[in-house]
Image (tube, rainbow, N blue to C red; front, side, top):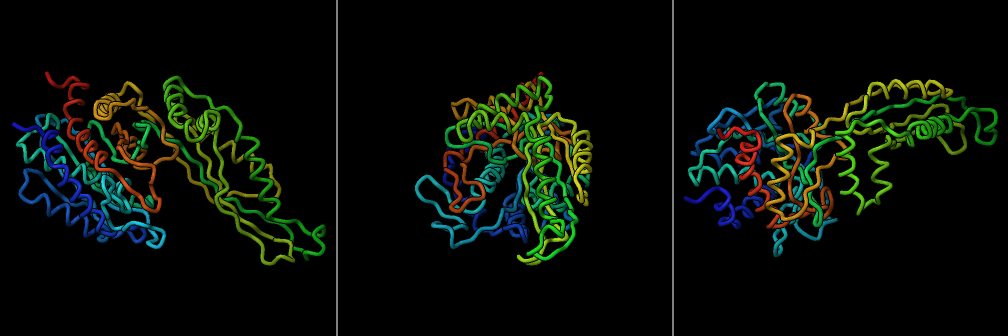
Length: 416
């Protein structure tokens, strides 16, 4: 009897054709219409021993849930998004809606994340084709609206109370050509909108006014000075992840920069606007500031300090704020051990257990009580022109996802 992993290896070309079918469907977000791709996936599952249902709050952005019954009710969830970021065809030398060149598959979403998504769907077909019952129940959440953080995607699925998983793996690309990793944490965030008020005057007599843009910039600089070099207090579990993260990122950004990124807050002045003419002193200005903090940091406490800092700045007020707390899976978590060990077996290289620099669906799932990691072989062309993945990455992803139920069962010691 052929097992799912052997079936995947024997049907490599079918998997390549599947991802090309995915890429041919334009799911740029905005607008984020994923109905055609969701319909294609649902149709491909007709006749298979699976349960399929849709969770839809926006008809143009459906979510598809697929369940493969297993030997136990313990459930392993696979999560992936149907939408992609936009593309500008004129910037591409390959077809952004899919093109194979030797061992590369080009297209918007090839590595983020229609490639891993196709691998997940192929796993369902592999279990069915080999008449294999997985040791765990498998659930697949193919969701919309991820690239813009919209409410029609995973938030709608979580709100429907249809997810009750023991663990989850998200197919976000976490590997580059020479380094493999699984992301086990994300960072918290504070997003501020700062409003500055000054006093208008003619540009020839600036001393008679108060420049709102100058006030705004001084406030941002004060935030940078007070928080940008601060050493964060991290517990031992998070520090261990930070240390591996630094090792992973050091080849591309340097050891010192990578360590500063996680052990201190990062601040980015994302937007700034103000003023009416070159020859006038601006009376008002506005800026948006993005602050990121390692997992385990008390974001609300930091926000209180940020508010106090801004209160010390003349003419500056906070008019809008949103924040999140970083989340983390411990390095000895069963899902971390299972994914990392399976990926190391497939790839033959060390798999780093690292923090993401930002946050995404993993944060929402962890906050919903589902232990979650992100993993997929891929390339460093995410969101770039001529985005691509490789045939080997596609096949290895499918093999990892097919092997993971058995590995996780052993890690959880459910086999008895």
